[in-house]
Image (cartoon, rainbow, N blue to C red; front, side, top):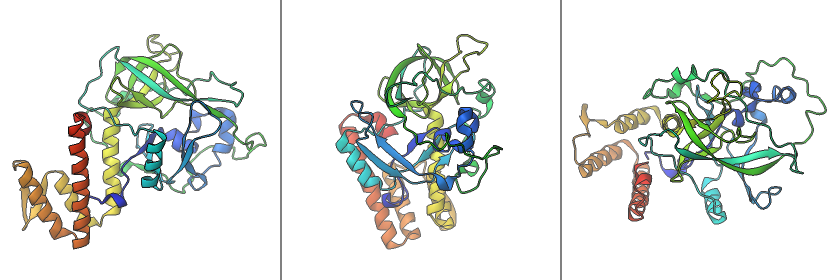
Length: 352
């Protein structure tokens, strides 16, 4: 909100890190895929977002270019990437009936046996064969990883993995076979299944499904009963897990962890956009403080109107007249969006 909309994304394309940068996660892929993956670098990657009609899976309705700069969570298997021409892409998506999804409110707690829907695309060959492969297992760290981040611990944006041109794979065989270089002719078949929650932690939620999730769903959304994103698919619990109740269960990263990641990622992007001195001041304002005449003032005890007046006064002193005007226009635009949501009764969307 402190950066004019023309200089920042308004939506994130969220996925699994091993989908965005598969060459960094060789263990997640079949052995016959690792040869060519080990030769890939970030400079070789081109990204696009396809809109697929379930009635014709062989030809996408539209294809939108993405910037080749994924941002990865430092510990969890998730990352974000962004549309190149966002305004035009979102306008076209709206015409196609594509809905931009919102995260579930982090304050809403998950309940045991709560139903969620896994949405995505199963990978198959053009004739519909070769289906039935299951997702990569989440490894044996099902209990250990739950201790990686204590609940409420902030994501450290300084540890974010920004893909660059560095070759950081350790795979020994970099020779590509003729089979490796064959064009990928696989298709994506719409897939949707309901699961019920059986395990919940701050970093991972597990849900039982009738059959293990198929290959292709990693990074896809997990939808709650209100149509909100409850998480993104991470993989499945090993089918030979000692606890039969968990074996083969779907694993997903919960919305609260995603929200924390997005907040830190947005702060990191803001840091790259703004000059260092201005970024420091914006950080103070977002924390409810600003410096006025060398005295640190708190906004927390002020009335909302007074908070806005004080913040605007400080911003106008900091920014150039043109940038201050752009900032004010952005505030008014977002204020209009909030008022529209309130009129429509979408209070959860306002809180997000």
